[in-house]
Picture 1: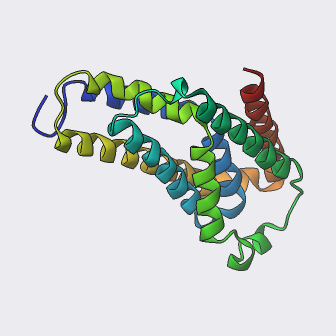
Picture 2 (picture 1 turned 135 degrees about the vertical axis):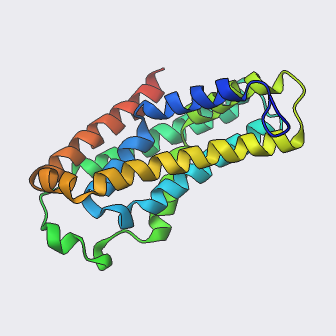
Picture 3 (picture 1 turned 120 degrees about the vertical axis):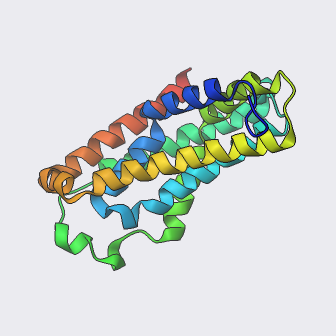
Length: 206
């Protein structure tokens, strides 16, 4: 395509963004924190998720084409991911009604370190992320691709994840959205918890 972008870049970029539009465990983790703690309590979750995706992107770019063929490693990631989802979901199921003004206090918000770890774990312990990026990379790794193009592709994918996740957190943190959900936030969190547990159980079954 150009000096900076490989031939299959447009296809890869579109496929990647369409995948981001499909709600998954990262999405529900972000909204559960953005609803209760707004952007200050969820922005580092977004960064952690982007970093976790970045690790898989880097692995794919340097030529680790098929993590699924390494059955032991894939199984470990799958089981850890399932357990993590079920644990997070169980925590959300314990959600209770709260004082909206009190919870906005920075002392009650999760620290940036906790947010970062939550986001990083969510991305790294999701075997679908690994398989997704391995599949995407086959689009561009089949032809002649320069090191510069690989760096550009990796940077693009990382930034797309980060910007999209921050957009979700910012949208949910908006005062109009908060106003409508204020009285029912704990119900939304419980619903997110059920979905996350369901995703975790699906990893164990399939």
